[in-house]
Image (cartoon, rainbow, N blue to C red; front, side, top):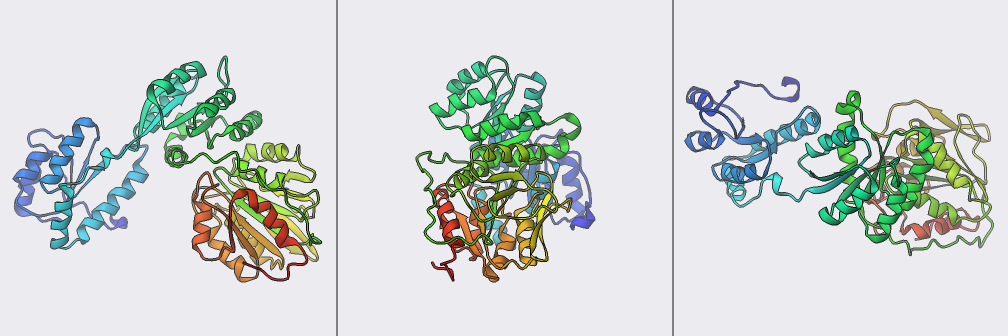
Amino acid sequence: TQDQGFVIKHKAMNGEEALKLLETETYDAITLDLHMPIVDGLSFLSRRKDKTPVIIISSINREDESIAKQALKLGALDYVEKPTVENLVNSGNEIRSKIKTVCKLSSQQKNEVRSIAQYSEPTATVKKIRTLIVDDSETIRNLLAKVIGEDPSFEVVGKAQDAFEAEKLIKEKSPDLITLDIHMPRKNGVQFLNETQQKQFIPVVMISALSEEDGPYVMDALAAGAIDYIKKPDLKDLAKLTPVIIERLKTASKAKKTSKSLTARKALVKHEVDFEHLTLIGSSTGGTEALRSILDSLPKEIPPILIVQHIPAVFSKAFADRLNAGLPFTVKEATHNEEVTPNKVLIAPGGLQMGLKKVGSKLLIQITEDPAMNRHRPSVDYLFKSAHEAKIEKMTAVVLTGMGADGSKEITKLKSVGAHTIAQDEATSVVYGMPKMAAATGSVDFILPVYSIAEKIIQLSEKKLLKKTG
C-alpha cells in the first residue's frame, strides 16, 4: 500500500500477461508465483529480457524446493513463502522488507546476489521444527496443526490424543518440540511430562484454557520442565493469536535443558542487612523456576523484593501462592497502594502493570491498566522506569531468563542513579534473550549463574557495602 511506500502499477494473472506488460512498461520490482496457467513462473523468467528484480512468492513443498532452485538460477533474487490470512502480518513484513532491499541493490550487487543465489538453498530447505501435538480434543489437534503447519518453520510430524499414543510417536518421529494439553484421560499432561523429561529432553509447551483451576497444574508442569504455556486458541481469536503462538513455539524450540545439578547456594548474611534496600527482578520464559531457585536460597529475613514475571492474569496468584507455601517470608500477588515492606516479595498481577510511587516516607505499589510496554503487561521496563522516577536511593535490579529485551531499555537509567545491576548468565538461562540484551547495554555490574544470584542480592543489600565492587 502507498502508506508503506509502494504503488501497485499492474497485476497479471499469468506469465504471458506479465511478458506483454514488460514490452511497454518498467517496474522497480516484480513478485512472481511459480504455478500459473499458460506461462508459469519458470517460463516467464527464461523468456523475459528485462533485469527488473524478481522475488518468488509461492507455496513451499518438496517439489517446489527444486523449482525454487531453478528460479534462482534463472535470475530471481529471493524466495518467500506465499502468505495465508493467519500469518499475513509476519509475511507482509518479510515481503516488504525484501522488495525494498532488492530495489536498493546496484546493478553490480544484483549480479553478485544472483550469483550467490545459484548456490543457495531457498528458505524452505532450512531444517524445520518437527512438532508433535498432544491433545485429547480432535478439534484442538486439527486447529493447532493448521496454525503450526502453515508456518514454513514447522513440520507437524504427529498428532496424539493421549499420553500413550504420544509415547509411541516420540519413539517413531523424534520430535523437536511438543505441544501438550493438561487434561487428558488415563494420564494427564503433567504426569506425562514428568515421565518424558526423565528419559530425554524435548522442549514442551503446555496448551491450556488458562482457567484459574489450571493454575496449579501449570505450575507443576513448569517445575517438571515445561518451557512455556499458551492459551488454547479458538476460531474467533485465531488471527490474533496465531503470530503469538508461532513466536513462542519458535522460542521454546530453541530452549536448552538447564542442569538440575546446579544447586543454589544459600545466601549467608555476613553483615547487617539494610532492610530499606529494594530489589527489582524481571523474568520471562524459564523464569518461574529461576525465581523459585533464588527465593529458596534467601535467608529468613530479607529486604523487600518486587517481581515482574511475564505471566497470564489467571496464573500470577497461583504462582505467588505456590512460592509462599514453602518460604519463611511472605510471597503474594501485589495489590494497588500496597506498601513495600521488608520480609515481603510482591509479584506483579498478570495482565496489569506494576509501578512504584513515593508518598512521604512510604513506597507504595501502583497497579494500573497502562498500555503494554515492550509488548508486555506486566513489563519489567515499566517497573524499572517507575523506580527511576520515584528516585529510590538504594536498589538492585535483576534481569533473568526470557525471550525479548524487556528490562534492557530502563536498566541503564537505574545504573546511572547508583543502582546495582545483575543479569543471569547464558549457561543457566532457559532462553538467553532478556539478560543478553540487558548485558549488551553495558549497564550490568554482574553476570551470574542463577545459583549465585540470591547470594549477590544479599551481599549488595548489606550495610557494610558502601559502593559497588567488581
